[in-house]
Image (cartoon, rainbow, N blue to C red; front, side, top):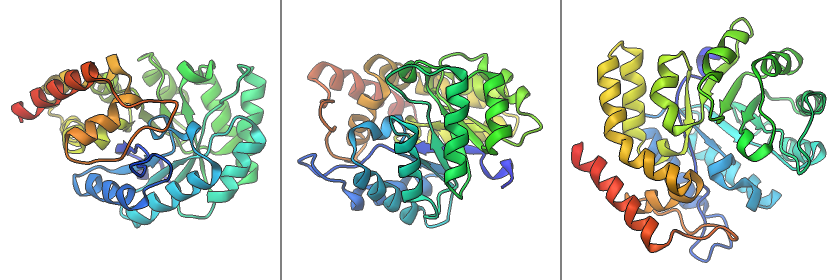
Length: 298
C-alpha cells in the first residue's frame, strides 16, 4: 500500500458508551464517525489512547472496530489499535479484527515491565507475522516507558513492512529524525501530539492522528490543508485560534477532556469507563470557556 494513502488529518475516536457506561454504544460511535468524515477529515482511528482501549474487553474492542469500519464504509482509511499487555494478547486481538477492512492495525510496545529494544523488535515482528493486513506503529513513551527511536522505526519497518506511525511522543525532534530515517521505506508519519501539530506539519509530518480532530475536525483539517497549500500564515492563525482548547486538553489530559469536549459541542459519547471519571466542575468550566473562546473566533 502506498504511503500516499495515509496522509492528512485522522480523527482519533473516543469510544462511545451507553449512559450507564456498561456497554459500547455502536449507534453513537457510527454517528460520530460519520460527522467527522463529513466535516472533512482524511481518516479515522479507534482503540488508541483516547479510545480507552485498556478499559475494554476483547469483545468490546471487536465491537468498536466493527462499528467504526462499518461507519467509515470505505470513504476514508481506518486505523485500528490492537495493543495488548503481551505479544500473545496483541496477536489474538489482531487476528480477531484482521480482514475486517482496517487500513492498518496499530501496535504499541505496551508492557508492565518496560521492554528492551530486542524485545520491542521481536514483538512487532511476531505480530506482523500473525496477521495478514498491514500493521502500524503507535509510539507513546509516556505510557509504555519505551521511546521508539528513529533507528528502531527503520528496523521495525524493515522487518514488518509497517506502513504508518502515530507518534505521540512529546519530542518534536522525532518528526525530522523519523521521517528522514524512513524516507525510503514508505512509512507515513502521523503526529499524535495535539500541542505540536502546527510545528509537526511544518517539519514534514504526513499528517496527524489526534483526539482533538474528533471534536474540532473542520479546524484541524483546515490547518493541515492550509499548510499543504503553502498558506503558512493562515495555518498559524488557525493554530493560534485553537490554543485555548489545546491548553485545556493538555492541562486536563486529552483522554479525560475529549469526551467532555464532544459533549459540550453537542456530540454526546457517553461517560468515561471506570476507573476514569467524568470531569469535575472546575475542569468542565475550564473546558467550556476554552471551547467558547475558539467558537467565538470562528
